[in-house]
Length: 377
Image 1: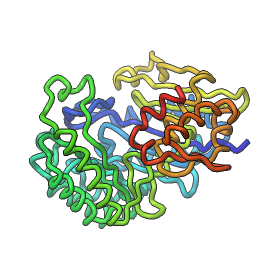
Image 2: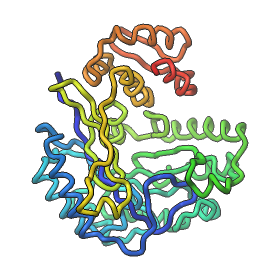
Image 3: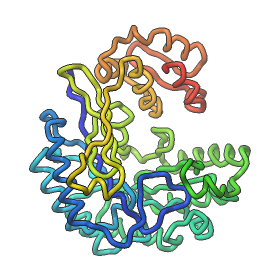
Image 4: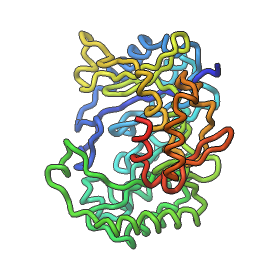
């Protein structure tokens, strides 16, 4: 058996202001217990050390919230101690999410100096009016300056997060956002449609979103434009220049393993010894996560063998590239024969194609991904 690749996700739960569309585990705060939180993360990792099973960390991702609120010195301390507990691979991709409204030249330079080698900058739009509607704390000029600053201090691998289907957005406005993003020459774009999620401000007071025909037009014109600009769509909402895919997310989609640290973080670990897959979640509220009387882990459960085909393909079919058949057995401990009927049905409906060694979603399968996944549930 090939060892399952191991990643590490670390959640930083604080932000300056909660955006009205956001359903992530993020909390407004003017005072962050930074030193205490870093110490708690390290205590958490020490308890989870055995989950690594002797593997190195191949990718590391600081998500939020707004990770760029913390000081570079905190991340330097964290990275040094992580490496002393579970080794980080020499060529590991280390990503930090940054908000353009919290950037500083010196801070970005220090992030780069301490070994963070990929920035994911949450722009969402380059239209200041749309940014105001989204409740963002930055404007268009600050977004552009933040990206240019990241490049100036030495970051060579930069993702820009953009949304489309914004309140009252036209296809012309959406394409203008993409054109501005491409002009800044990032290596990666996350481009996804705004959705209204429960437990958000937008859910209780929905904005006026574009009609379906406009959303379809935006998506088709946007994909064509990005292809012209040299960006390949390798995942449902991810586009990259050559060899610049987000390796951390690719590990998710290929059903790899990932340790989870921080308030509300989710993890997945494979045990080859007893052929089981465990999903777990850390305590959600920051105050509870920091409480020494409480457990770091709030939930932990094995994925049943009946659910594994759906779990595997829910991830793998997000990728717009062929899936190695051997990966299914390696990552689920199930035989290909166990899914013969589902594969046949998916092929007959034109949702996937099959070769001797690979499966791949068709354009129809990508478009109706939920219908495809239902076949494996």
